[in-house]
Amino acid sequence: MPTQRFVGPERRRTPRYYVAVPIEFDGTTGTTRDVSESGIRLELDQRLDQGQSIAFHVVFRDFEGGTPWRMAGSGEVLRVEEDGAGFVVAIRVVRYALAEAPSDP
Image: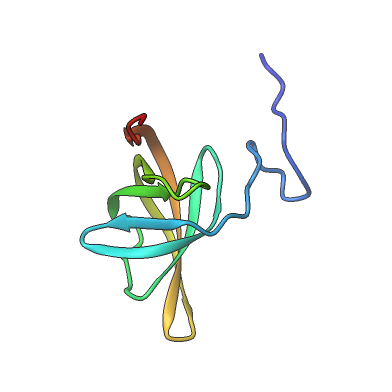
């Protein structure tokens, strides 16, 4: 049986990357706080429901001002916390796929 390997003091199975990029779904946009292979934590102006299924696009902008590309994903809302006038939402990701890449000039 393989040995479980964990990353960091929180004993995560995959590393967490602290990055703030736009995330789009259901006609609204939020901002990621951190992402990993298995989850995303994001800030939103609207409340989501725990257990809700969600499809989303994480938007990565080109550093040289070119067309952004999008990573599609789907998952389940694990936690929703009030944070001032907005909400912090934790999503367990079940799928990622390249959705839209910029075309080469």
